[in-house]
Image (cartoon, rainbow, N blue to C red; front, side, top):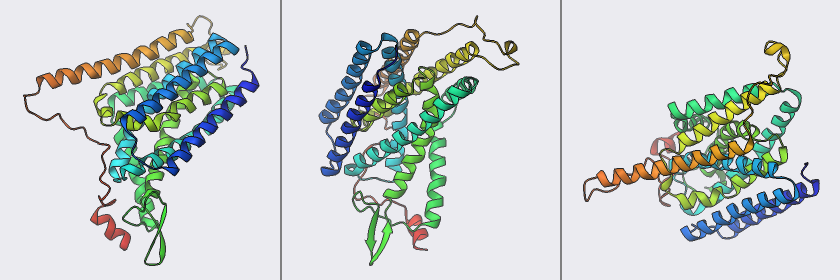
Length: 358
């Protein structure tokens, strides 16, 4: 059963209005959200996604509802992984904590625009080239292996550092923030603030994660509306989740393995689906491979939920065991990054300041 057009348009309009209202609220009252406030917002967006799934089931069918929930959970887990890099960026540039909401919201908007473009491109490729499923599947398996065996976050930080070095070389940038402004006035001259580099770094991160996440969601559903809706719901609660989790992010030590397993599983599912719609002449003479097993959406949903739950529980158990083994009186080990960012801390080092002056 097809999803009614009126529901697609109406849903996107309502979600866009909520997103705009959220943005205006931040601009009107920049502040550091409390744990309770962040928890309420996260609960609101999660409930909204579940209500959307129920309505989708009622006006459509269970298949579309399961596809949406599976896609949403996959994108949500990938978005949580994205938060690790956001933490690195906020810490690296000492973004004042009270302005981190604006930075995150701009990052979310950039992510939505980039993912919308990739969704349209992916839908067009799937429509015209069925063999693209082979590439998507291989890419996801490769991404999963990279996530397990390599320091992916450090690679992304290095990519961002290259962009930052290029910007610093050609564009004069002030050493201190002026609120959330992109430009400030120094000695009567307009000059860019460090917030520009922060936004560029966030944008580069969004681009990298969009490349990883879009093939994953297309492995669950090829319906462009569901793909975009899953991404939208996953990103809408990301800002509040950032402040809710705080330093707990670093304690989810096994989350990356759960995400890697999900990506590898979807990669295999895509490859099997590619065999079913095969048109490549050097595989089975260009005919469909009907004997290849198809993984149902219900099975996919079960694997995704189980992977997230197992990774989370394993992380919590490992942390509890480590805490019990620690000598009495020892302070808990600090993670490599922290959300705390002193507002009076300089945005750049003395070396960078001298470079900008030159």
